[in-house]
Image 1 (tube, helix red, strand yellow):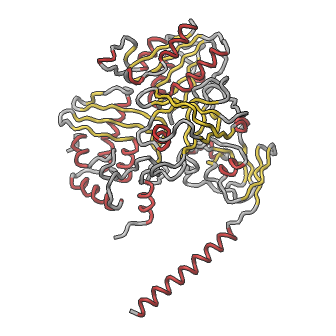
Image 2: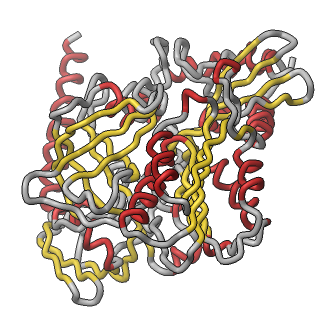
Image 3: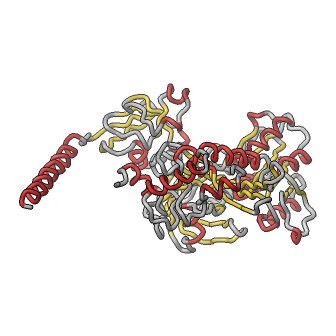
Length: 152
Length: 367
C-alpha cells in the first residue's frame, strides 16, 4: 500500500538537511510507514506500549538532569549522563512540538548496554511510535531499548 | 485496451485543465495588491506588495524581527503585536503564545500573511537592528567543540550594541542542506570594538548551523547577519555582580566583563565558569590576566568531572555547589547567567535561596 502524502511530507522532514544535518533515518531506505509499522509490531510483541517505553526514558533523563554534566547512578543498576546544547529542535512530525537539545547517555551496568537518546526521541516515541531509522545515531531498536531500560 | 488509453488521456486532460484553472485563479484571487503596514500609530508607514509574511515584508523594509527558524514557525521568536488586520490565529502559532499574549494581539509574524492593511506595534529598540555582510577574518579553536569567530564589517560600517546582546547569522546551503538556516549567537567582543563582532559557537551534534560554522566556513568567506538583538545586557544600578556561564555561554559574559573594564566602572565581580573537564576550559589566561590587573575581579573555573590526568587543583563539583561556596548573600547584587536551561534553573534556585532579588537575576537560556 502506498504511503499517505502526510507521511511523505514527514519523511521529507526527516531527510538530512531538513531539520538536522544528519536527519532521522540513517541509511534506512524503508518507507516511513513500514518503519513505524515494524517497530510498532515489535513493541506489541514485547507486550509494551510506546508510552511505557517513553515514560521510562523520561524518568531516567529527569534523574540525570538533577546533576548537570555528571554521571548519576539511578536505582543501583543504571548510570545516566545528561548533556544540554544550545537551541531547540522541532518535531519532524509537524505537530508544533519542539524539544530542547538535551541528550541522555544511559547505561544498564548489569547488562553492559549503553544507549543514547534525545528529549526529542522521548517525544517521538511517546506520541508517534518512532524510534528513528536504522543507521541513525539516535536509532534505538525497541527490544534492545526495552531490555536496557529494565522493562523486559 | 483502447478504452483504457481513452480513459487515461481523458483524466490527464481534465487534470491539466483543472491545474491551469487553479493557477489562473490563484493569480487573480491571491493578488492582494499594495497593502499598508502602520507601525506604532503612524510612526512608520510601509507600503508593501501583499501576499508575503509580515516577517519578510518587514525585513524587506529593513525592520528585522528576531527569528531563528527562517519563518517555519518552529522557534516562536518573531512575536509582534498586530492590532488590526491579522486574521484568525493559526494552529501553528498556538503553542508559542500565552493566554495574555493572545489577548494582547501578539502573533508570530512569520505566520501572519499580509492580505490587507495592518496596524502593528513594534518595540523601538528593534528599529536599531541592521543587516550586515561581514567577512570572516579569524577562526580560533577554543576547545574540542568550541570555536571563536571574528567577523569584520565592510569599510565605513560599524555596529552599536550593548554587551550581552546577540547577532543572528544566516548560513548558506551545504552538503545535503538545501536551505539557508538562521541562528542566534551571543557577541563575545566588547562594544568598543565596533567594526567587527566576535562570536563563540559550540558544535551541536547534527546541528544545521553549527555544522556549517565548524566544518564549512573559512577565513575570507562572507556571511550575512542581522543584529544586535536581546535584552540580556548590564543594568548599572549595582556595585556587585555575579556572573555564571557554561560552555559557549561564556560569550556574553566575556563581553560584559570587557565592557566594565574598558569603562573603568568600579564594580566588584566574580565569574564562575562551569565545565566538565580541563579540555572544556578556554580563555582561562584571558580572565586570569584581568584578575591580575583588577583586584575587583575574580575568576573561578569549576570542573564537574575532572579527568585523572587533568591534575586539577581548582574547584570541583556541581556548579551550584561552587556558587554556594563563593556567594553568601545576594543582597544588593545582580546576577548574570548564560548556559543550558538545566544550569540556569538550578543556579536561579540557589541564588533566590541566597537572598538574591529574582528580578535582578538576568539570564540567557540556551533555547
